[in-house]
Image 1 (cartoon, rainbow, N blue to C red):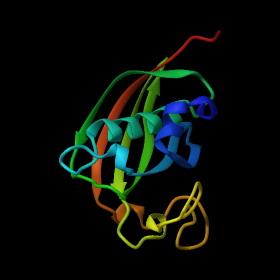
Image 2 (tube, rainbow, N blue to C red):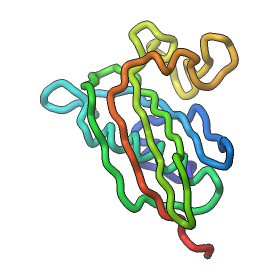
Image 3 (cartoon, one colour):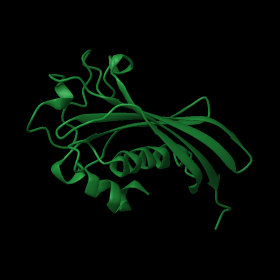
Length: 159
């Protein structure tokens, strides 16, 4: 699914992790705010943050391998971001029942000077955590939250 996702690729979204924990999906991705993502107020257009969350939501609720789509979602914008900011989102499947599920995505802003924010980093740059284990930064929980997204999903019947 991800390899044919032209929208996420166009946005420059990098996947840092996709996993299943206790039978539920979890994914982490990052995106750098580019000039084409900034609105007339000089802040990131809310639609761009929404697309970022929706992509993480898709990664998370499709991590089981079952084709799953969005049934409903909402987002709370808590703080603005600007050109050059690096966003990291964590998607966590709260629960599933039958063909339905609920997933949360929390988006945080990387602090200035963090390895993820260094210029010249291409795909995968900065994905190594401070402790050298790779993947998700170990200090992520300390970063400011900029948006919270909740999505309800529906697994499609087998084809």
